[in-house]
Amino acid sequence: MKWLKYTQCESWLAPIRINPETRALTLPQRTSDVNLRLPRDPVQISYLAADLVEWFGFDSELLLWLTHWVVGVPGHIALMNMIRCGAGEMADIVDSPGAIIDKASRNDVDMTSGLLLLFITFNWECYLLGDQKEEYIYIGDGYLVLSTPERKKADATLQLASKYNLERILGFPGAPQP
Image 1 (cartoon, helix red, strand yellow):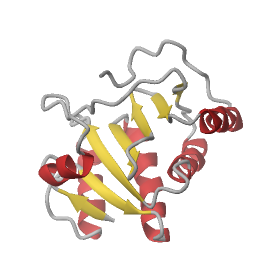
Image 2 (tube, helix red, strand yellow):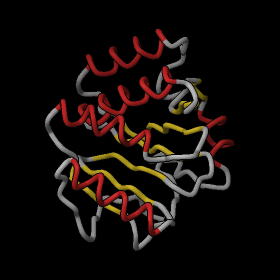
Image 3 (tube, one colour):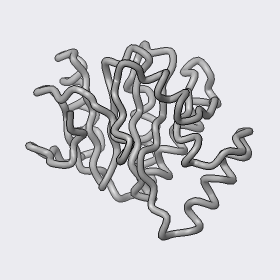
């Protein structure tokens, strides 16, 4: 896992635009998007987080892009800083909000699953994007958006929702906006 400075994230994300105020990404909304309410059970979240990393299939590289974190609980930021420091990153979240995940590295995949578990539990907001920039996952405010242009994969996404008994949200207002 390699943490990236904000400008490095911008380069990796090109041509996707970033809202400088919210750090939200300008991504397509598709009729096949699956919007789900996240589970609250930590064990279920941990298994779901692992499945979300694997959801990308053939993408060899992923970007984990942290867009919003709650600063009201000091322990959350401290824990995140310790995890990042242990992974060799000395810069804080504001300066290095993204990480490149090599899907061929079991350590990267496991670390990403763990980080998603924390982000969901802490109610932080993030995106996970494949290197083809065609598919993405948005996590925030207790919700999950899985977006793919492939109808077959969208159907498989519904099976993932069923596996975890996740409530589907229709007309989800919190989804990333263009």
